[in-house]
Amino acid sequence: MTPPNAGKTGATEAQKAAYWKANIRLLLSLLGIWFVVSYGCGILLAEPLNALSLAGYPLGFWFAQQGSIYVFVVLIFVYGVLMKRLERRFGVED
Image (cartoon, rainbow, N blue to C red; front, side, top):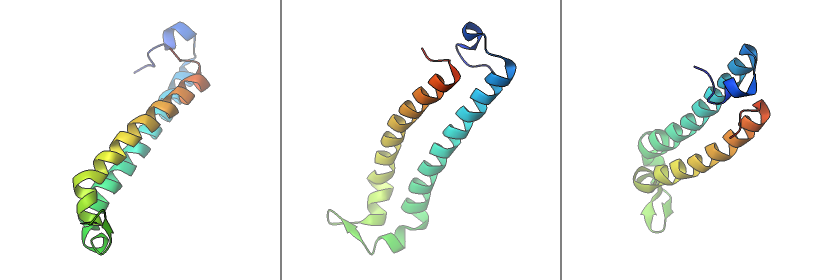
């Protein structure tokens, strides 16, 4: 796989590989955060978190029902911002 605009930029194979390595690292990091929040806080740590409450609901329940969705939406925006920086750094911006 090559970056979308890599052919237009004249990037070397090493630059293309570095771009995709950074891209995949970013993606896996953000997915890891989402996994920890959704699976960890919503399922594995639900009982200890239920000792706390948020807006009258047990915190573990809140994470399972809404919290992981909110975190996912925030991570989408974070991904967009970080990808713009990554694209600028490697010269493959739109």
